[in-house]
Length: 195
Length: 91
Length: 259
Image (cartoon, rainbow over all chains, first blue to last red; front, side, top):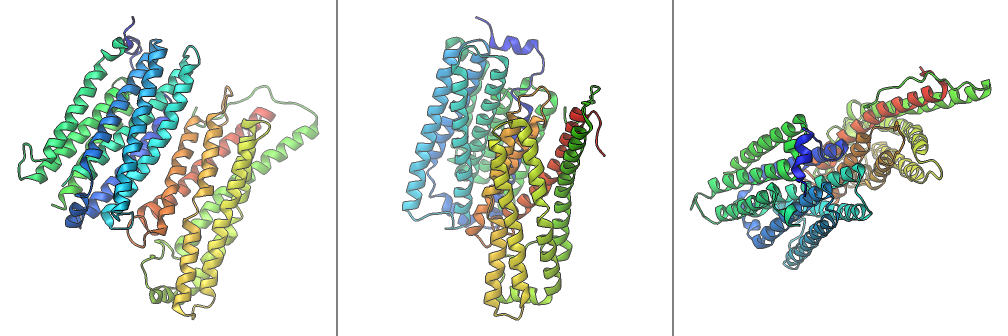
């Protein structure tokens, strides 16, 4: 069985996927970084309000969601490596697993938001909740788009041998999913864990 | 499947899970006790270390053109510093 | 290649009529491309030095404060709104040339080109209408401040909230760019992703309905500054790339670059 790392070390530098996707990823990251900075900036003016509101968040939900996305990223990375060495069936299974993690994430978000709404918290309750619902909401949209991308990747991988073009598509889609993961890693820390 | 799993990125996954656990502990008093401000800074640093691992190993930037990799490395350091700065201004 | 031009040594030599038609087509397209730039510049002049709406009038201001602004800046606001309304027409030819280039990629039937045409055309409404409403507000500045406040709200919300047609326009353009299967694509692929990114950045505009203060109010970072900058950047980038694409088309079809 060939080593998935072999092909890569042989060809020195390799840009995973298309250059354009990276441009989108960089752009998205810049915007979210701005969002994070703005959040902390306004938080600094109003720490008591923010920490008090933060206490209503369920850290366990946040942590489980983090574990789900970290694992899904792992699955996707494995899938791409598998596709490179011809392990098509395993790649399919891994993409499906990643998709499943996404479903889990959305499920937990559903419970989390429902709990909040029932307790009377919404996007205009106060500044903290504005940022909370906004950032996790925009992130959720990214998750949904990411899952559509995963479904597309699954479909691409399904059809026979994977050629170079399809591999590039896989890498591009995978990179977007990793972005989704990265954004949540930051959100979990900022919203749930910082005191 | 096992051949796929026995790759360096699986170790990275374990590191990420461990780092998440570490953040959790920091957030609950481990290591910093009453100084939760320092714990929060530590959490931010660990967060960006996690993000860096995702960049380099999951997103395969280790083997990508240097320019792109350094763009992300610089962003990671800057973003971490800026966020710590804004956080600290409220302390 | 980024946006370079390729020379074609095998000029398309045909009867004069066809060449004439081609030249007219290219010239018309070029006019449309430059219209876009013209619109962007005029819009900037209208809203900034003329009407002095930079930064936008804050949604948190009281009725009296707003009425005062309309009373003391009446002439500038009237001029600025007039200029913005007049300039908005130039968005139409720009949309047309984008449509034509998309059609070259899509072939027949040019579905997404039409989607873009439809969305891009509607965008013009959300520039003309606010101009007219600001005009109405400045028409009788001696009104009851509450009425002026309402007209002011009306204009800004109509201007900044409707992101939907903008993102559709950018999104379908991006998809079409990415689906270009030619050897030498009409547009570089990064332009498609750029359009996706622009589309995403217009979405926060929808949030202005909830806030009168902060980064999500209509004068905030995510609803005004970012979409405004990105909107102008889009015009400049698209102008550059369309100009290159039309020039290339001229070379491909006639064998010489246009003026």
